[in-house]
Every structure is written in C-alpha cells, then in structure tokens.
Amino acid sequence: MALITTSLFLLALLLLLAAVWTLRFEQRATLRTRVGHRFKAATAFRIEAARSDRPLRGTFLDRWLWRGGIRLTPPYVLAAAFGAVLAAGLAWRSGGLLAAVTVLGGVAAAAIVWPHIQYRKRATAMVAQVPLFLDQVVRGLATGRNLDGALSLATEETREPLSEVMARVQQAVDLGEEIGDALRDAARLYKLRELHFVAMAVQIARGYGSSPKEMLESVSQLVRHREQAQRELRALTGETRVSAWLLSLLPSGMALYMVVMNPDYINAMWHDPTGRVVLLLALALQAAGVVILWRMVKSV
Image 1: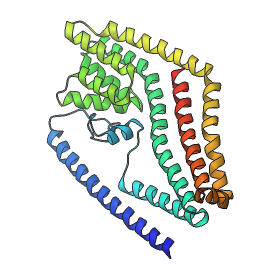
Image 2: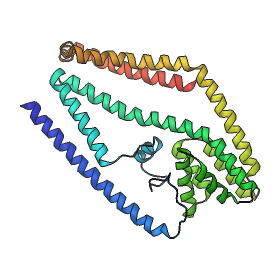
Image 3: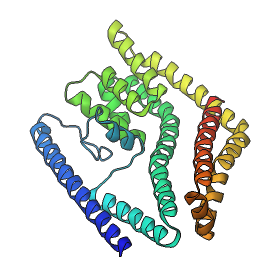
Image 4: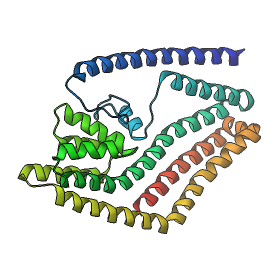
C-alpha cells in the first residue's frame, strides 16, 4: 500500500512539473512567433537549418541542450520522466530503496552525459566542415561578392550541423548585429576555437578595410592542419581512452549487476552502519576516479 501511495504521489508531481513545462514552452513559442512576425518584413534571409528562433545567448540549460542538438518538447520530457519513475518504482519493488536510488542515479547520469556526447560529435563534424565552408566563402569573394553575400551563399550550400550555426549567425547579421560579433557569439556557444579564428579574421579585415580573402584562406589551412593533428592524436591515444572508459564503467556495471541479481546482499550492507559507510566510500572513490580519468584523457 505504501508503494502504491508513493508511486501515485510521484506521478502527480511528475504531471504537475509537465504542466508547468508545457505552459512555459507554449509561452515562449507564442513570443517567438510574435517576434518572427515583427521581423518578417525586415529579414529576407531564411534557411531550413535554422529550425528554432532561440537567441545565441540564453540560459545555461538552453545553451547546454543547443550544443548537443537536443530539442526538448513537453511530450518528450513527460515520456522520459514517466519512464524514469516507472523504472525506479519497479526497482524499488524488487530491490528496495537502494535499487530505486541506483536506477534514478543512472538515469540522471545518462541525462548529463548524453548531451555532452552529442555535443562532441557535432563539434567534431563542425570542425571538419569549417575548411570547406571557408573555401566557399573565398570563392564567393573571388566572384565579386561582398563578405555578407559570400557568407550567405556559403551558408546555403553547407550541410548540417554547421549550416544550422551559420544560419543563426546570418539571422543575427540580418537583424543588425556585426558579423564578427555574431561569429564570436556562436564560437562561445559551441566552444569552437575555429570559429573564433574566423571571427578574428573577419574583424581584422573589417577594422583595417582590407579584403578578408587572404586571411580566410590562411584560417582554412590552419584549421585543416589542426584537424589532421587532432585525428592523429586521437588515433595514438585510442587505447588509453578505451582503457579509461572500461575502468570507469566496469565498477558501476558490476554494482548495478549485484543490485539487480542479488538485492538482499546490497540491502544488508545498506542497513548495516559499517556496510553503509563502505558503500558511500566506494561511491565517492568511484566518482573521484572517474573525474581523474576524465581529466587525464582530456589532457592528452
């Protein structure tokens, strides 16, 4: 009976949070629609890649999800939260409170790690696209276009995910922002040094009144050499990174296996004062080890 009551309470809390999220989502969607209608007559540039009207500057959650290309909608959030609560309830029924906490901890860890993994994939793809994008800009400048026109043409011919970033940069430029500032904002959002190089080249060319063609060609070559060096480094350190992943996931996987297959053993430790200290110490050491391994791999 207590389990049913707790489950109903969690479900009611989940529905309340989903209602608040839906209301906030609809309010922001309405605001974006109104702003879009206001600027529709002033901005002629539109591109399919710019699927959202969120600004390049936003809350931490907006920037964090945007980097990973994740678009949260109320049905998606509701389904994910309901699945997490259901899994935690089943784990609680079969293995007790510790099993439920373990499941919720795993879900929270996945929710944190997954956007970061998606961001790294998108960032790698963007870096690989930057030289080709700059080559298209240089070709546009060679045909007599100005910098804004060359960037607009190159953006239309670029594929995802870089086209989405550059389309938003072009939107900001159409709304009156300097192109160098828009590129710098995009570089900060996605934490890409390559876009910082492009923004710096554009600002120097604009500041001194020179043609950005030569500077963009140099940036394109620099990005190519940098990407090639990073690929070689990743190949040389592949074994180290795989070892770090295994050492990080193996203890957690074994602990989860023990919770699922023999919950009485873990429950006995959890209800014993000494066993609880041992479990908490093991959890703290595991977290510290993951952080140390991650920093070691990141430094190579």
